Length: 131
Image (tube, rainbow, N blue to C red):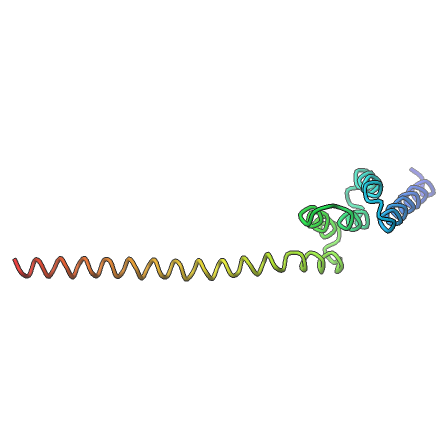
C-alpha cells in the first residue's frame, strides 16, 4: 500500500467516524452503531471508534467494554479513564462495603465459636470436677 493510499484510507475512516458521530447527534443510534462496528472490525485499535461506540451502545456494561478497549489501545486516554472511573465508582464503593461487612461477619463468627468452645470447656470441667 502506498503512502497516498494509506492516507486516503485514513481520511475515509475519519469521514465515516464523523458520519457516525453526526448520526449519534441526530439520535440515529442503530445507523451509527453499524458504521462504528464496521470501523472497529476493520481496525480493532481505532481508539476514537471505540470511544464513540461507548456512547452509542445501550448498556453500561457494553459501554465499559468499549472504554476498556479505548484504554487497551491508549492507556493515557483521560476521557475514557474518567468515564470508566465514574461508571465503576459506585461498584467499587459497594465492593469496599462488602469487604468491611465480610470482615465484621468473620470476626463475629470467630467470637461466637470462641464463646461456644469456652462454654463447652467450662461445662466439661464443671461436670468433671463434680464427679
